[in-house]
Length: 333
Ligand code: SAM
Image 1 (cartoon, helix red, strand yellow):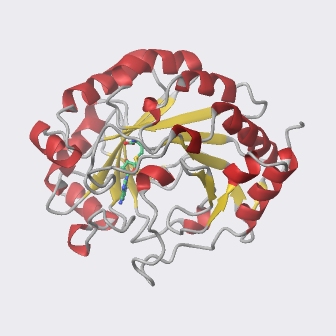
Image 2: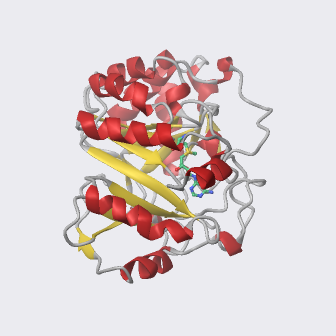
């Protein structure tokens, strides 16, 4: 298969070159807003696409123009031998960039093998720097372990480490400056993400939602924020720096100032469903195609149709509660 230089483009002229893959719906944390407790309906292994099946899909996707892949979940590091998958993905001609989003609990032990497999960019999700609060949010007492994982990625020299904090009013918004302070001392990007109304039973409420501009205003009180130019394929964050910092700050505003016009993403859920918008439940059963008779041509057609039908933008605010019943851990955050 040749590497096609013209990327897949959707009906609104957006090139689609970024594929996010949820490797598993399982997670070892129980963040109340993400993974409802108890999680009694975990997917059986046969429902997940095997690594061979994922590679088949990714070869076609890269041929269509995908240049960046993010492995997420659930917790992607719970999937066994994830390093082997990464090594093989990076052998696909045209794919140089495989990233990972993780809760960081297994990073201390896995960072070395991930680095050797070729990962250079990781996002670690962390909503509190206070052990007691971390336990309240996640249900486990593992802040130390997450922190050791972050230190390990820094020691190994990962090129890009982002720390993602979902900001919830009255829950963790009193830690904004503590998080920002990390970007002064460490070469990481601390990103503040608006809490999104995803999933029917995950507790989102307008009283918890803090818009990005308010987060920025609170931080600006502590000192000026200088804008930093984003790099190609860098995603939707607006990036700033506090003068004299080793790292940067990112602000992600899917609700208050959506970035749909620049969206370059396609997603594959843990159940093997293709999804062109995080916040819209329109899905195509790609697993049926992969396990059916259609071969590469069938996969190609499913990818192109999903790209063509990608909605212009999310409609979360016009029709709250209607668009996204899917659970984040399955869709892949
Ligand atoms: N287990 C991995 C992790 O913790 O990063 C990957 C999956 S997790 C679903 C990915 C990200 O989605 C996490 O940063 C989580 O905080 C975020 N997330 C989940 N639900 C969210 C929501 N309603 N609004 C904003 N971010 C959310």
